[in-house]
Image 1 (cartoon, one colour):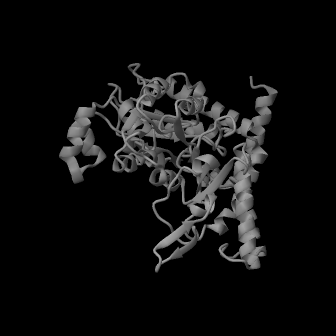
Image 2 (cartoon, helix red, strand yellow):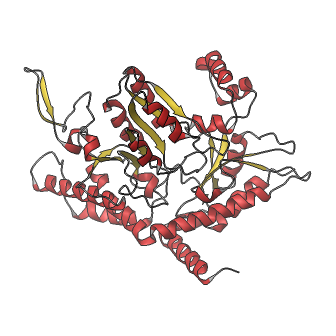
Image 3 (cartoon, one colour):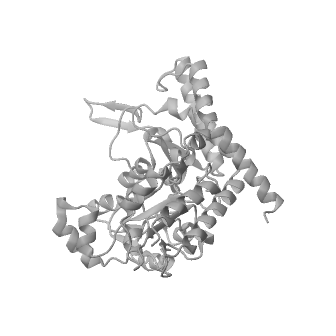
Length: 451
């Protein structure tokens, strides 16, 4: 029997879905791709439309009244984001970017990599973080990956960093939550890395949509995020939240409109502006930045503890139902990747549907059947090659040989044939608008493969 508190919580989210996401039930759609993008609420669209209709906003690189209005909107949005992350302008700054990838690239291109300042990446990283290694290699810096264990959790990361610190310092980058398995990596690695002399870039894009994060208690030097992962709208807008002392250590390799105090062609000279202004290239997306308040208002109404509990309950329900599915011969229907104990995991679940012999069914077939059932799931490796290679136990030597042989003929199917291993999984990811009926329908898609 459900407790009164759980009934009240379900009632709250049912009413919220009716008010903010009624299009889901109107179209009979079960959306379980929150790791790809959150869904926006109706109130966000109304608030943004009313703001744009009633106000006049101009390019903030001016002193007119519309320009000042845009600058005010942007300054307020920076403060709102910092407050959401439990810090303020006395210690942190916000640089608006196009997305998480662009935020990470700002750090990668400006970080002072050298032979003594290396690059240390978690094997469980989105490709946007993996790309940092190319800037490090260009600078002659060592690049090293922190491996994963059988549960796709970081393995001996502190020990490996301690060994590396004997030879220098550098940048450590890892996700607060895996976009592949949902595993949440220990945030205390930030302070442990600091104690060894490292700077830390934390990818929070998959974590903060349903979990509170305090950058006061978890003092990452750089935190990268996308707002559409938080609350669906607007797209094309992200941020780098950076400690002001860490920002001062970056050296930008170029300048652009809006980032300079002056630039001279004749004198071949320029001077970057201070703080975020020296990193926001060109005209910022001030009209979409104006939409952020409504998104934060929606999250504030829900409350992060209640949202965390909601996502956790639905994820547990989904995992339990998947584990219970069996073929007629008793073989499990689903193979779930990541920690067996899901207590320190978010709302993303990666799995393969298997036939009665235990062989994975191609994820594309599962995606197709889900789409026909009006259920949104995601198939592939989710731009996270390290976690997927660990999950599928791919041999590094075999991987290298296959990639070399395939070259531009690479496709996931050909790579699978070359490695003689199924590559790619199905991911269900749960968020604010989901309910138990969505879980039941997703499980039903998997159950339809039962033999």
